[in-house]
Image (cartoon, rainbow, N blue to C red; front, side, top):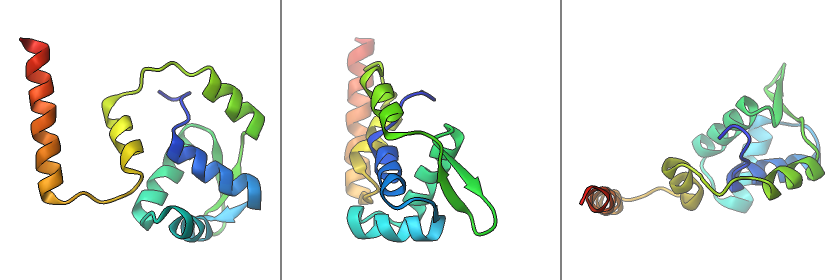
Length: 120
C-alpha cells in the first residue's frame, strides 16, 4: 500500500507541483477552496504523503516540500496494482466529506451483509 498514490494524495501533490513549497496551513487553505476538505482531512492526507515519502516536512512552520516529480507519480499510478484495501477505498470515495450517523449506520450494515455473503 505504501507505493500506491491515492486520488486524495494526488490532489495534494498537484497543488505543490503548481505552487511550490507551501506551509501546511496554506496547503489546507488551498484544498479547502478547491476540494472543500476540512483541515483534519487535509492534515491526514499530508501526513500520509510524508509517510510515503511523497512530500517532506520542513521546519520551521511545517512547510511541505514535494519529493516526487509529476512524471514519477504518473508512472507509479500507471503501474499500481488494482488491489486497494477497503478502508482506503472508502476514504478515497468520501474525499473528506463527513457522513451522517444514518449514512454510517447504512454503510455498517452493508459491510456486515457483504461479509456474511462471503461466509455463506
